[in-house]
Image (cartoon, rainbow, N blue to C red; front, side, top):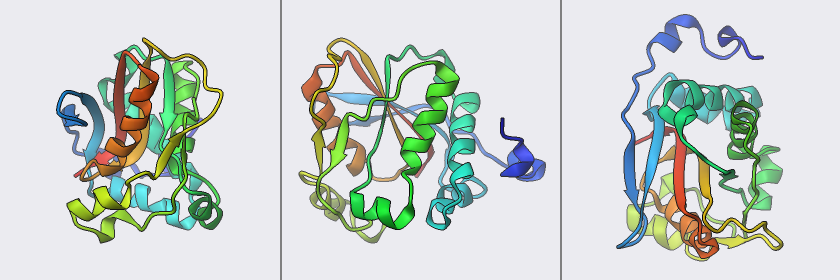
Length: 192
């Protein structure tokens, strides 16, 4: 169990400004619900950026905030799907923040993590690009993993740390829609 003081002091915790759920258009006919704790601002921005310094506990704490401070706990889901890192970025960082958040959400919800996607193309950092450049950067970046369980008619919760333009989630969701789920839902710690 993580004590709040291990990651955020009480004063910082009290400064979190919650946001209401929203939606993200994936294709002309499909959109997904988005549950975020806060806008991409301090104090949560510091926890998100802690991934660059190997501060794994911040990922666990972000997942706890996602569970406790959004309606996520009342949403019916079947699997939790983290956004994958390319192996090169994983080697640099040593872990995938989205996977660590997914594991904690799995522990809290009792729902299994499904590593349904692999990142097959090494892409540039999204924050360095325009919105149009982000979509091009992620073209064909994800593939479905082989030998997945049948998830037709299931609800899949996609987990990532930040939602900015939505390019990453759109690229991942297009792959996941091939599995014919009943619904895709996204949870992030922060959104812009």
